[in-house]
Length: 98
Image (tube, rainbow, N blue to C red; front, side):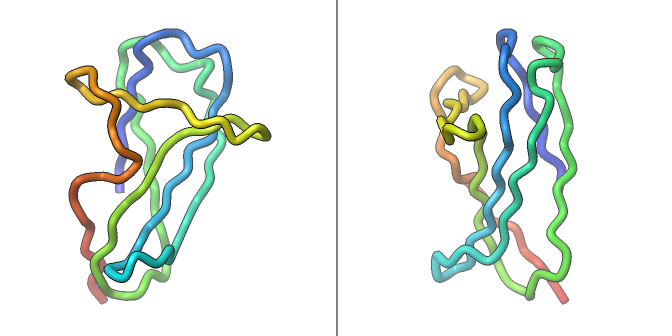
């Protein structure tokens, strides 16, 4: 899965990306926390990140994601393309086939 992020202003800190996969019952089945050098991101340019979860069972999953500072766990607000703050959960599901 590819995700694309864009810094709208300079980031003076390095954030950690979290990605959670949740099954149809609402149970967390996989997660990743990935530190990024966000303080070095170019302003206004897309930064693609590839994410993979090996060995997932077949099924439909919701993706929850966001950013936080380590070790405080302070979350960064994520802004959508039209300026609104968006949820940590993507609006669509992903399907994993055998």
